[in-house]
Image (cartoon, rainbow, N blue to C red; front, side, top):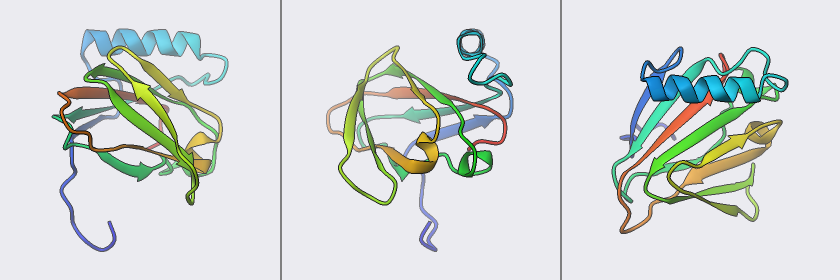
Length: 141
């Protein structure tokens, strides 16, 4: 990033396919059933992020690699653990919106959201660990 190599401020894992844990597979099956009309191909990949504490974060970004750069798509995120804010702002800057994401919450970003908006999880003092499970269709990162 910016011609520098930086440590990622969280632990990440990507699975081309659904992560093998039974709860992750069950959640994906339920999401695929619910969103079948909007996403006939279904969610086919899993990303996992461990935010170890409030020092871990993710900078402003959109999932615009691959198909997400040109096509409308869906990204579903299930959150486990500590409550954290998720910020959303128009791509290129502008006022942001804040969503509080708590244990067990589902956040779905669809349509042109990934191309036209950025999102982030800012650093936050005094919070414990959080796991984010992201479900995406193939070719969206």
